[in-house]
Image 1 (cartoon, rainbow, N blue to C red):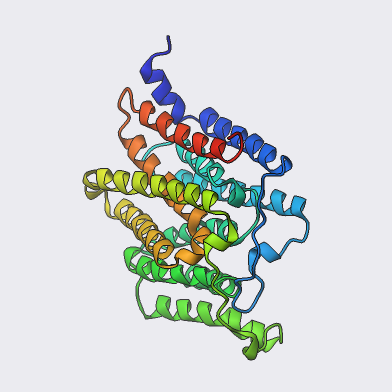
Image 2 (tube, helix red, strand yellow; image 1 turned 60 degrees about the horizontal axis):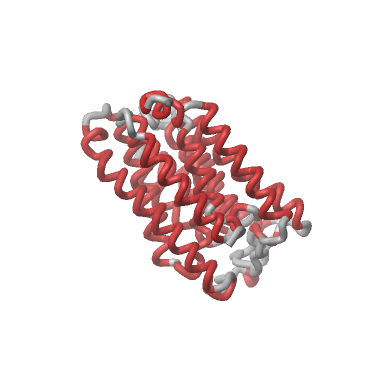
Length: 327
């Protein structure tokens, strides 16, 4: 019989993280090629087409969706390797993120705004972390807001995260006139270029049509989606509360990093609730935040039987996926 301590070490290992990711990739292929996938329709862009309209081929759409998920997982790995945000080496976050993505297979197997957001925003987080107590790192600040502003042209939901990064400037101890000016220049530049080069006419900029998720997917799938998001949000917020006592004792840099993740998670949850008609755009970002927060807890609380709640959570996501395929 395998000892509990061995299983606890296993769930944090590279083999487990990559192994779960590989199983999820196979399951996604089965789902897509089995004809279960329901394509997302509608253009939610402000000035440019939203991401679900970029690729005409379903197969290319699927491949790009998978590649986008892989990019997010790579950034998650680099965030911990470079900045030690989880306080120990663990690849449980990759396994959790992959499983959470699989629980919403219609979104996972397509390339859409949520896929792009879950790669762009974590990349911006990496850029922000590199600015800690470096007030002259205005180029990174400019690039962060440039990316967010450009992708806002494809979907208004990106604009929500400008709040996170303005707060992040303060958390990184670089909130000054220079960095704020760089941020505003970053916000203005994409629109100035798009309008200046004639790619977008001012008259073409308009709020998108708001479409309820109930009209995009059927009621049964919508119920499963809401259950999945409820499980994810509950697990994330529970681990956040349990992490509080640990994070208070961290040094200033670590507290700043964790504070950024906290604001990012809370804004994502608030945006998903407030913008419920567009809730699917926030699903991958919620999964990213939850995977990082949950892994942070279990990487700093490695009790002998801590693998049990992890397996229970993974089993829950597997069951939700099975309800959309086997049943």
